[in-house]
Each structure stands twice: as C-alpha cells, then as structure tokens.
Length: 254
Image (cartoon, rainbow, N blue to C red; front, side, top):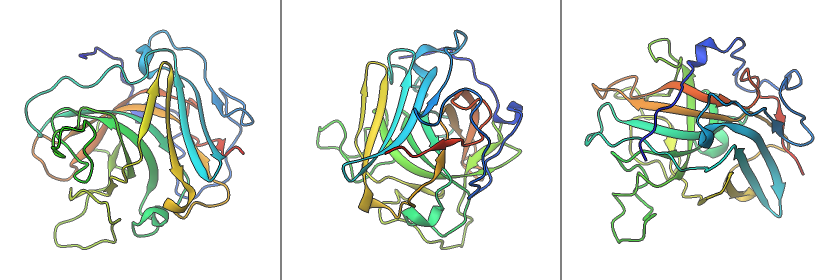
C-alpha cells in the first residue's frame, strides 16, 4: 500500500550512540528496561511505524524479537518503481550490541542489526519461497528477515548504510548470504505480523548469542543507490526510534 510518511535523518538524533560492543548505556528516556522499551504514541508518525514497545527476550530455547506499533503492523510497503536502482525498502529494526561474528560475518564489522524488510522491486531471499508459488525470486514485497551490518556513511541521507563489500575482497560471510555486495544475511526466520505486533523467534543455536546484550528499536526507510555502487543501500531516515536517541538501552528479558 502506498504511503506518505515522515522520516527523520538519523544524524538529527542528538546522541548517535551506536558504538560496537558498548555495554554502558544510560537508562532509556522513554521506557522501562524491565518491560522492554516503552515509547509514547507519536501522532505525527504513520501508525504502522509508530513504536510503542520494543523488546528482546529469551523464551523456550529461542530469542524473541518483538515490536509493538500503534496499529496495523506491516500494512505499509514501498510503492514499486519497477527497477532495483533507486528502489525503497521499509523496515522494522533491532540494532544490537552483538558482535557481527556471532552470525557468520567477520568480527567487529559494525552494528549488527536484526531487521524485517519489505521491498517490492527486488528479492533478496533466494533460498525462500515466502508466497509459496514455486518461484523463489518474486517475494521481496512480503515481510522477511535479515541480519545486516550497519556503519556510518555521511553520504547517506540517514547517516548510515549497510556495509558494502569492496570489489576484490573476500570477507567472511554466512552460508545464507544472498549474493549482494553488502554485509547482509537472509537466514529465513519467519516473521509474524498481527494487529499491532511484529515478532520473530530465532532458535538460540542459530547464532552465537551472548548471555546478555543491548538493543534498541527503530522503524526506518532505506534506498538502493540509483547508480548501484558504494554505498549500495543507505538508510534514508527513521519513522521512529524506541529509545528516542539510539542509545541501545534495552536488555534481554527472561
């Protein structure tokens, strides 16, 4: 469904505290760690991206990534453009303090984030047939999961990009890397979007999860570079940030 939404560049958020591995975060200004990150309703934010609660918890051998929005989670997806170059991506994001090596990349590559994305102009889950039609290459418009590594890039409108793989280099990559020249994984974890809730359950054994880690909640838009070169996939802005300042104050619940 086509949408008109308000985006805020990440660089305008006062304290961009996304340093890898930082475990010393101040208490969240908008929430209570014991109950996840709780945020006030923001009437200026499109309802399906207006975060009211974000949490990560351990449940029965799984890590549960969960966000709650004001209403109609997952209702809005980008308007198709008919081509990869310049196409848009909508996302529900959990930036974390987990090391990038935990999911199969080289260590210390940037900010490891778990994301759900939808993008009707391309498919980046070549091993999955999300719509069950026998074609694994036409499902990008359906919400699906990724691990991505984010790094700062001043040339991106939102100040961040998914880390590019320079030509001629051979970094360590997960087995389910989809072949794009960026640090992205397509692990195939199935999302559930119902009413106000977005959630995904990841088996503990699917990654080397630390006993405790920090996280935040973000809803954001990204865009593929019109020239299809570094930076290939930029964050263009945020719809909402659970903590209000990207300080990763969340702690994993049990």
